[in-house]
Length: 286
Image 1: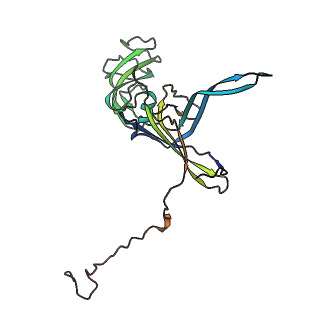
Image 2: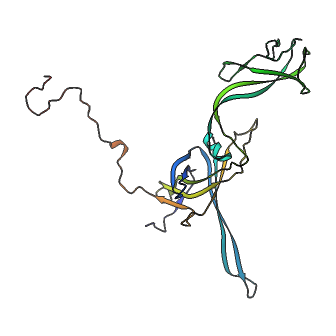
Image 3: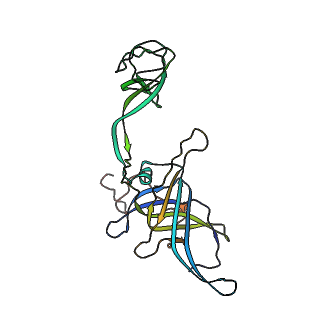
């Protein structure tokens, strides 16, 4: 039983795991997402209240609490395809093999005529190949050229004028499809961190358990040239499960005695053949 005089501090961010819910029982099943690069993980509880007032000075006499809300905010330094799918869609990530379209700006250096397939594009500022970050060249497919006024380019270009080219690249990867009727789902969520004892200064296990958490749909990705890199926020709203226990906070220690890491059983490796019996009779190979 916990000593009511024990006091602890909590500082360390939690590692959080999302589990899918069984469709018939609501119990946790397979892991859906594991987050171990969080910068911030916060739990906030709010509620509304009604009160009865009366007597001299009209002080509050009875207070009723209702409308409890528990929210969890997770701020991740990194993202994965799965975390992005859970944040913005229904959690589904599909393989993607298709073409993507890119647009680039260039300045003409020679008065040449451009044709639709890009075979005649004599300018030092435009190439028929795309140079990727890996240093390799990839063919620009279906290039089409436009003037600065967004008109299709016909005839010769004017030296010194800026133009645009749109083209396709064949790619492979993954895709997250965000449709008008796809929204984040509901998960069983567990967060693991530590609570530090005031007396010993030692860290002890601390875990929060949320049987039913709905991922909120509001999300923002910030893309900027300066400053810190973008963080990825995931907001959860805690729902009431069948037993009414919306969240559990568990400070625990392992129930069984462990072994010291430096006292593992030694493994003896023999570099010679052993006799099958402890006698002087040679074995079949002797």
